[in-house]
Length: 116
Image 1 (spheres, rainbow, N blue to C red):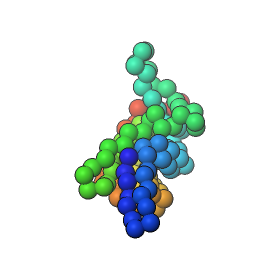
Image 2 (image 1 turned 120 degrees about the vertical axis):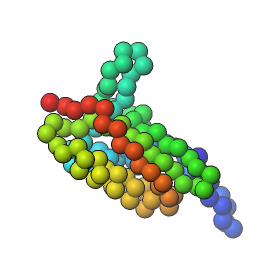
Image 3 (image 1 turned 90 degrees about the vertical axis):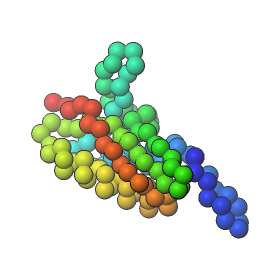
Image 4 (image 1 turned 60 degrees about the horizontal axis):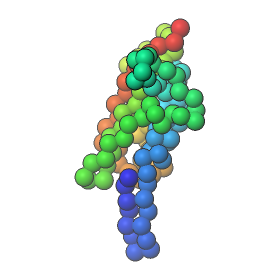
């Protein structure tokens, strides 16, 4: 959780906010089928529903009030993976910084699966 202080009070932004914003921004990019989650019981990668997108996102907080984001995605077959990942990185960084005002230090995209 990141906290902002001003003369009028204090604002706290939780991990759920960053996860939801990140998941929505990533799934709106071309070629992304959805967010991925690796099950601990069977080791398989599962496509997450829109309500559970935050499971595919990991947020790391830094001392300088910046964050790093790691997301796990499933892409469609036949897309250019470097181009899709670059698009996701730029879109997520822009949307998170615009909506929260927090500096995004890094966005790491892990392609866990490809749909046929």
